[in-house]
Image (cartoon, rainbow, N blue to C red; front, side, top):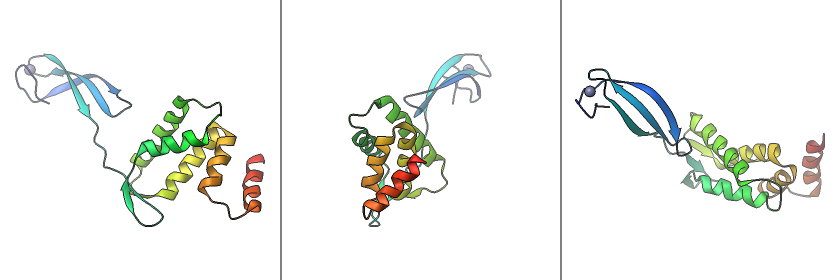
Amino acid sequence: MHCIKCGYEESKVIDSRSIEEGNSIRRRRECLKCKNRFTTYEKIEYTPIIIIKKNGVRQQFNRDKIINGMLRACEKRPVSLEQIEKATNEIEMELNNSLDKEIYASKIGDLVIQKLKEIDEIAYVRFASVYRQFKDISEFKDELNKLLE
Ligand SMILES: [Zn+2]
């Protein structure tokens, strides 16, 4: 980061805060030479996360899909969009922190299920019943019993 006044290369960060849901960082810097203060906006670069679907097809991770899936499961439930977005952010962060850059879709499904379990039991059962595609009613009952324990 060159100083915008004298062009000196080194500056120290006085303050930084993340903006736009943590996708970029606003930094206040001070030039080590002329003490000029300036602001920079730095985009946090993430390696794109690749999702491997059940049929082997790879596609780029898309957070909207997670939000939509959760919204569907939470229909007519007392769950706010804010809660869903927060959960999605947490999932995305977890994926970003993972060393694997190719992730099986089933892992994301499991993460969503975990989050829904914390947010709303009905939404959880709804999502799990679609996602896990229970073979029959007894399998579904087992899942319910685990929840009730
Ligand atoms: Zn300077």
